[in-house]
Length: 299
Length: 302
Image (cartoon, rainbow over all chains, first blue to last red):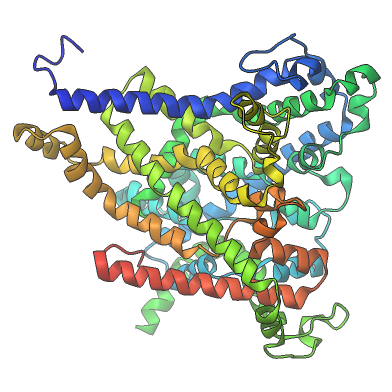
């Protein structure tokens, strides 16, 4: 700072800069505090949590809540289901997005304008909840895993981003050269376009995957059988409807339960639910930022 | 002409094959439900099916307009989304402007990393966090209130507070992520503008007002159009989870009503009518806001 700027900034500018640093610092703490508080509460004793001793760091450190959580087969099944929904669902989403976006990016294709319009209309108008539900019901997809995969096979927004990328970032000379050598469209997509599109495919995969992992609404509408429920739905029952799994409390002494063990359990559940996303987050943050930026090019 | 089109089509047959599945998806899962909207004008009966049920014209719409819930639904929906817009629209812009002023380094990176993070928290977990933090006696917010001598408050059971809790928790969760798009726009500003401003002795405030803000205007208007266009489409997920019997008078919005009447109450036709009414208003809003924006500022979606 001292070596770089030989001319000191004017007084007004320095005041502004200090204000900005203070405000940003305060804002960051406001975002950070609830997250830290939850983590600390989940690691404290029920007594400390209920009597309000926890403010920032764990009081009477204990891992009891986490041990109980892993005894709940409901929750473990939810975890497993969510992984299945996320992996298969994201695969379907990404494949469909590419299958839609690539042809739409090819200027040679006659009639692509009409397909584009067909797709864009769905962005502004949709049948709505009830007609979609009736369709899923008539197709006998209710209460099957397919109900969470098929009704939202791709997002129009992602298709537009991918199409823009294909059109603007892949040199047309490549296609001309490939065609010269007798490469057909499918081969061109597979061997040339996709390897060159790795960054956008990564962003797309992440966005779809987070969407699947965090979704509960489709499960709420379409699923009835307990063995199909995804994690978020199980969490809703436990955290918001207060229906704790008896298995979680089986090995807990009555005394501890009276002290408010279920409260600590909730904090621990929140932490466990966020773990996959939190572990992934630092590594993928810049991809998400890139995704938003690519999307904003053609807002 | 016809022949060349035909030739082109023949040459790109593989493209049509690729696009077949997604187009089938669009037709089945998007267009059939669009057609299914006609049940809003029918008395839908599960046994007779969509086509066999008798037409009733605008009966469900007049029922909706005359229902005692209707004014309240519209009021809640509009208030919640306008409040969200008022709070949620400017804050990410301020955040981006502030971040743009400070140098890249540990502090800036940490601020960005931490403020983006809550975006990835699921709705279920977010609402649980809200409920836990605000719960009477044991929640940290209520303890703070008691600490400062204010009386115990049951935040989630207070109808007056519902909208503020909904909106400000949303700001907490989304401001960082929403600022990315503005940060990107600021990164694209021509550096020679700043140099010229420095030559002329412009202060930081002047640079923000005369260079940064004007460069953000096009993208800000686009975002504003999009949010105004969905002013009637308040998201279902978060509100539904935050609802309880105590706050329902201020928290019932069109989407939660459609779900309750339609799916829980099996009143398919009436509920479709409510949904259709809602999407038509959204469409009209989007188109008119876009037209106004185009006339006033030459920035528009199309």
